[in-house]
Length: 364
Image (cartoon, rainbow, N blue to C red; front, side):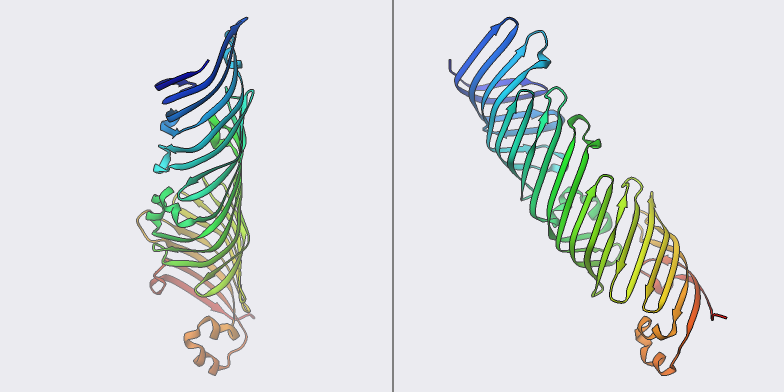
């Protein structure tokens, strides 16, 4: 039997839609309480409303064998293939649209699998492989890869963060992700992801700072984001970072920063609008620093720092610490070490007007 019908409407598993159905082969049988359906069909001009306000449109075709026990329809079994030549998903969060969905989905009794399914999102080509099932309460296991992703497009996904921080982001990244979890509860899914950054630059108008020439790999294995041998340039000097951050609801940060003449180790926690610096230790040439305190990030205001510090200053380092007075200091021919205690408070970008105290002693 063949079927051809224009403007057909259907409803299946929470999905409703319209399409022109063309099924050159269609066989239906009901025997001993078992529905048996075989079909080869194309759905031209398909528009399907999915849960969550998402809409799929395209011209898929299918070769399907479906069996459904009348007494237990949840025990359906489905085998065959679905071919998608050019599909689109719209109505996603942040007005995103997934276009040019192409590939074949394999149906194996009570699950679906796809290999090398391709799609385009934010002008970026993405490749997806994986499987989902059982149909009654599906869990997914999938791998996603994308190359040379324009990171500036993140502004379209998280515009609020970009606007609040006055962020500018350029550069590209090769992305990869592995996801496992129930479709009904993807918030608890197991996620492993990585991003290889290539010549990335980020600037914050709020902090009045910029980082350039960022290269390296960042990895995410829930709930930890880590980076290793990540290189960048700040104020025309190259640096190398290693570290991690855990728990994005109340982030805990541990990282190190190294350059030719500076070593810095930081341990900090964020709660609400405050970053508590639990430990900041550093070395600059022959001088050293230990500090702790608070950085307040109030909405609509510049960051405020409130730190206490102690350390030692090698007088031989002063010309490099205060290059504007290098000649005068060098002429003094200073030597030895000073013990320093200090506190500073004020707007991060307005250091000349910080409220500060300073105590300097010489070792006995």
